Length: 436
Image 1 (cartoon, helix red, strand yellow):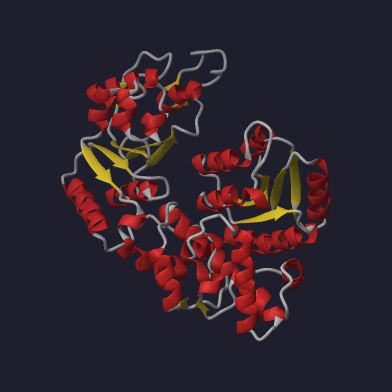
Image 2 (cartoon, one colour):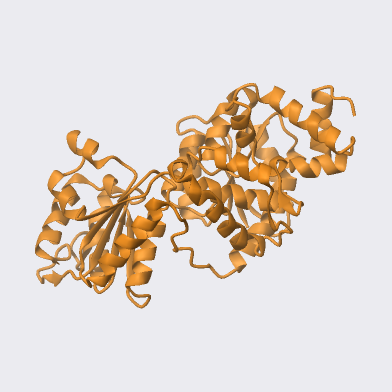
């Protein structure tokens, strides 16, 4: 397992690096700035990143956002000061697994890394399961399924635009369409936000040998590779303006040339575009071409945020429970009514992605037969109590006191309920002067 530490405090960075290196089969990378950390992330297969929120230049939140945009499969732990807990809550919504507040015990972080290393190894060893099925019973999901069925029944290559907030499942919808179109057909994807604008054209069109200095051999572009299948342009709102013009022409003429090429190549693919941006707003600001918008928006599909289709939450919960519990070897077989009510009341601004991460994290930490309220992440507790990031210490103190009372002062059981070590719990008991 490869671990990356990004922290500008040399003492913390060195202490974590030294301690984590001692874990068997774990390699450690270290960076002082967000920029340096991103460089390591892009050039190495990192499994776990420990990131300080306050960094010079690009801060930890921005690093996490870029990890999400690049769709990197990385578990993230954030480091922050107690005064910055609101940022830590934001990080959790963006998909961070957990966070530690300074000052913290190096041993506690190392213990978390050890636990996660076991899970990550098992996760990588399991064959990837196809999750490109649309799960839900809401009018929105039912309507999307009907639209997909209608499109595919016509057997025509058209243009589909999927819109929705980050985390709603736009790529899942795109893959569901591709799967129904035919598993034997190519599915080619370009993430316009992940590829530098200077490289987008060569990725899309390909090039002939000698077309430019670096073109040592001929390369097929994604347009060509998608023929007979599906071309998926993810985050199309981030496409370079000059490339938008060229793409428009391709969609109009259904033909294109490689860069430096003379021969025309026919385009025969279903085009699916997706974005979390408001393209009409981007058009008004000159960032997106109006003519291209109408060309890619022949069939619009809008995915509503999870907070507007809460009837899908129980279905999604059971779906993710079934998916994860065998892979994590969890004893959890369901969810209590109280916990379900809390999850139904929560707004899920991170949408399906946040719900999925919550279930994964809860199953790793919980040792109960059912998911209980105490198993859920802190930010959901804070929402229930109306705090949302403020007065964290008083909320934490109340939670520990209530759990200790419930467990009749049993430290081990309370630590398990909280998902922390006995040492961490004892330190918090002393910090808050709680009588046991």
